[in-house]
Length: 599
Image (cartoon, rainbow, N blue to C red; front, side, top):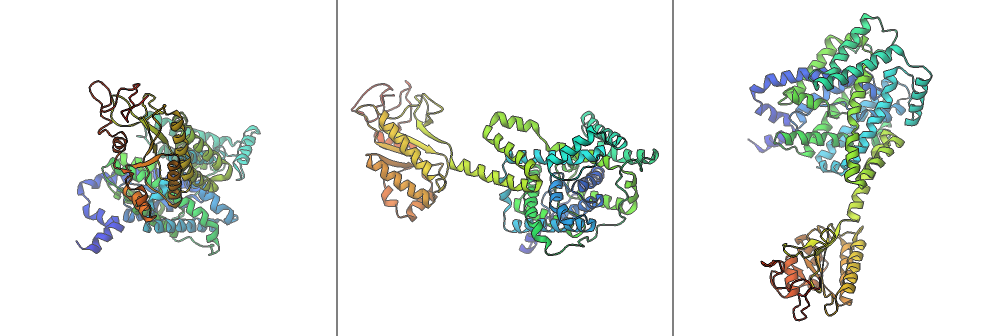
């Protein structure tokens, strides 16, 4: 196999998939594709309407990305398509620019998908797949909970047939509450919508999704509307345009790009974060691995394809992918079958949606949005880690106040703040010796651990850089001063050992702080020893020309530093009586022994 062909398989995984495809998988993939189609049609139409777009664009945004991802995507069974978490962001980005022009609205959605795809492809080529790891779980939890709530608020008026003008969350809630209290609920639409919602939830609970409630209501809703002649008494989706996806970029201009650029970056970040988590989970379950940058590129090309052919931004689907997996999907042929069947529907029977109530689609979207809200995890997070819980709540509130679009900026900003706080104030500890136990232990967690006479052992669990170097040096100085005051008479503090193994980086500011700290300790008659220093940190010290300064003060281990201080080898080994070998028992006073410890 030539190197060029290997490279082609890396960037076009569909080629490798065809070469390695097994005939025994065929029926499983075809069957799973047919099952998946039952969700693709209503979900695509519902998410399109949630994004403020015509329902048919959701089918275009289903067919095209799935075909593109089958060629360029690295995950074997991941389903790509419209997603409830992206819908409110898309709406917030394109509706103000469209100014009520329906054709321009569709064109802006396509342009937004093109921009999102371009950002993702460039990020994949630059191998930036790791960046989404910066969006921590608490931040993602708060963000998705808020997005779920925003989607719910936007769909309840459609469920109840209450006219609401889009605006801030508080304004929409006010209009919704006012419509309910003033009796402006559409009784027919409300009955159909609430019944559809109940059917989906009951079937999910009783039969765990084996009977797809979404499919039931999408079939039963139009049938009821036609049989009871309800088409004039409630809003319906109307017929789909007959045909396959086609370019729909009319009405847009180059000047629209700056207005969509910010949203494109935010959507790209969120879409890939969701897709990457789902892709990695699926791969791990199958004993496989997925390259994050390849995933980013595949998702980007899928977005570019759907942007050209009448769709809008898409991501990995956390609701449809498990359906495909449970139905026996073995490869991306499942997605191809699903896309072709949706296309066949649009060619052969587009009139079937003429009687589909919008309230039914609202019920479908509400159930999907409810899946984004995870109150149980939020409660568990509050019990486990209050600081993470506060970040999650701040993200939640920030998205609700600023909206879906600026909420991305809030989420990313809070993630950066959390990263800075963790690096700025890392965990640090004084280590001591526990009789009967090997090693050196955190004295804050083990009160029984004692200092070795004349010695202070400190550990700093983070890099030392400009943001925390002052905190690092100040903590060591205060710890040394305190240990010196607490030293028993006749056994003054002489040595400070820094357990430096967790220190993975040392920048110029950190180096200056280390040198100033050494000067401070030296002026007080204390010797600073650096134990377990990593090679790259030694390289930094050497580049600053300070290797000679610390010669003789690099210890391979903390134990070696203690041995050098006490003059007794293996000072952390305990003898049969539970006493530290080479040291007198705790509480004795032996001035002749440099390892004597008053406890």
